Amino acid sequence: MVYNDPVPVHKSIAIDSRFVGEERIINIWTPPGYEDGGAAFPVLYMPDGGVGEDFPHIANTLAELIKSNEIEPVILVGIENTERGRDLTGASTVVAHEKYGIPMTDGAKNFRSFILEELVPEIERSYRTTDKNGIIGESLAGLFVVETFLLQPGAFDFYIAMDPSLWWNDNFLVKNAAAYLTEVPDSSRKLWFAGSNTTDIFEYTRQLAEVLQREELKSLDWTYADEPNEKHHTIFRATKKKALIWTLGR
Image (cartoon, rainbow, N blue to C red; front, side):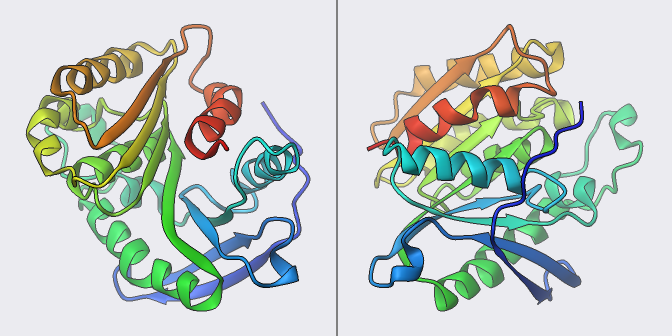
């Protein structure tokens, strides 16, 4: 399906990253009132954040929800893709058929370092930000969001993942989730994730929900949206409003 989302007014910058070894284009949308000065805002980071990717429709949705006073204003920072499969996948997969077309480099480790050690400091230097930030992604980007939550839970305050590709590496993250959850900080964190009717997605998102329910982490506020009426290619747009309202609602 082709969408013709209007491109909102935004700024773009280029960062020459030593971690991913290339220049990356970053798109930044600020909420209404930002130009008036004074107030600082949380930041929502987004892989798949190119102008020809998901940046326009997420920025437009944020604008709509802010205008209706359903969420607090946030800054959106979209990261344009270069080699998506490389950047968003973690440790080399043990499943042979998954190797097709995706470099086996644990590129997510470098991409995460780029975000946390280069991009976040640049945004905090250049924009009025609070100390609260989060990350949103779908499919492989959702996998990256969940992996970041499990491996470095202190990296962000809130995490949103639609249809994360948890089948990656023989569903390694889900198999090891209970062990990773012992590292979640005592300070409050939020996790919202959803699964569509895609078989190799929902079986693992449901398993992750079961692990979270069993572990009962007091410092984690989480919710799982089981979406059997949505397909993999529809779930991002179908669930984005409720995900953002749950996460950033007033």
